[in-house]
Length: 263
Figure 1: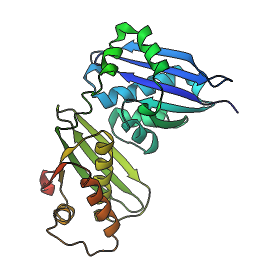
Figure 2: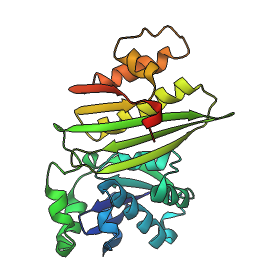
Figure 3: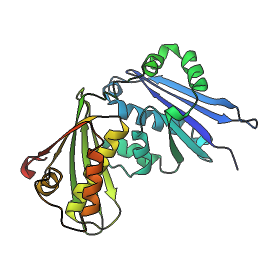
Figure 4: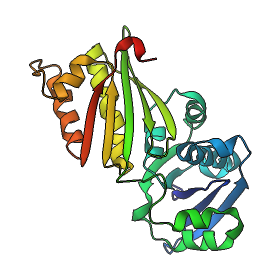
């Protein structure tokens, strides 16, 4: 069995870069391949999340012969890569990239758990890509912990499955949308809770500390605001999990948006 590979993803304002490594027989990490390229004017307008996803897609297409036969551990700036790998996203360009990556065996590992020697060597060898400056900052613009984020959520239900849609707006007004298939039979209210839970999990993994949560489900919003009591045993697990996630923020607000305005 071939040893796994490790793929480092890096994204800056105008460039992306990746580094593919593997441990040798003595357990020492060595470079297999590295890639970097300048973004097009259109790609420069992508959100930071989309740039990282683009880096993963770009690497997979270029290094397919290396990565397809083995497990590849993904190391990136944000845990949101994990959602791209583990949930069937169906939104815009990220959805297309996700579908193209389904044939690969990817696993996410947090960047902080990885020793920085190889990454530092890679950055030192690519000083012109603007990636080094971006990565050396301890607090990236993606992690504005003490500023307020906005989360809009909505759920939908069809005969045999559900759907969850969320929009995350950063303090710098970057907007990223996600759609998920929920591969189990559930009610509309359960879908609403599930959409909220997914959005809160993503924000917590991004180190957000303050959030304005907006949804068109009056039942969900008022129950979380303690204006309604949750008496349904079908909804109680979702309700308590959402409350636990909200309690992990330093500050949160709940806002109901009338359904006809939730486009």
